[in-house]
Image 1 (spheres, rainbow, N blue to C red):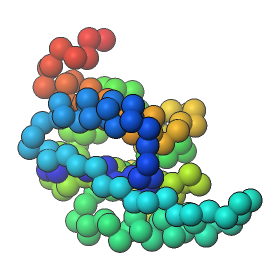
Image 2 (cartoon, one colour):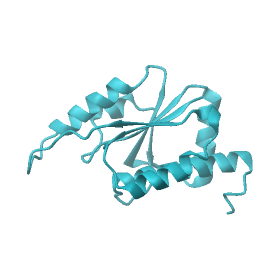
Image 3 (spheres, rainbow, N blue to C red):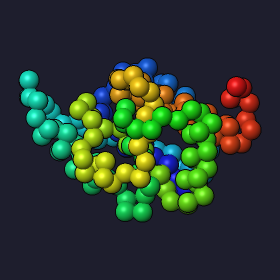
Length: 156
């Protein structure tokens, strides 16, 4: 099983890249984890339309593989504690398909992306900046792996 994160937003502060890398380099090699970025679609000042979100959605869908299991990171998704995530990850690994986690753009994810998803996961009820969501995602993925393998990182 391979895991990747497909994220809208190609420019993040350096601390995001550093923190994200600190966790993803610890992930097991057999996951062949990778980050694929999609540029944020340019928005017009005061544009309240869904045009940009739909355009980003089309770009996301074009990057998904047909056999991939798609997990959206969405504030309206299901919240999991760390042990719950480790259990879901085990279920997904048993399924055997590659996983693609998706973080949408500033306006969220299009309906077409939501329809393509197999699961929607909320990192928090709080609205998080996209860079922080990436870091939190990577840390929780590493924590889930540590729970699965009995690694001492997760001490609770």
